[in-house]
Image (cartoon, rainbow, N blue to C red; front, side, top):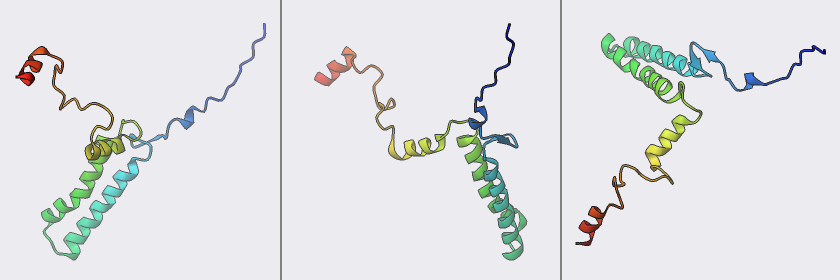
Length: 118
């Protein structure tokens, strides 16, 4: 009996972009960028512009909050291109698919035909 182990390259590492801080691919860079913008705006508003700390904190939290929303709502755990598809849907509508929000529940119902005829 011939007992040899056969090795085959599967290239499974090519399918994954990895994980950092529990985030898929390179999404942690968005969080790092939002944190950097948070610190810079906080320092600029509080130190250079002499704004109050709470006002500076609220103003500085805007870019970090937007980055967190973008990452966790539109990218993390979603298929590739989900964020672009959502934007396209919001700007252009449903495309070639039927718009279920405008279509009546029973378009071929006899009751609807009688009201259209009379």
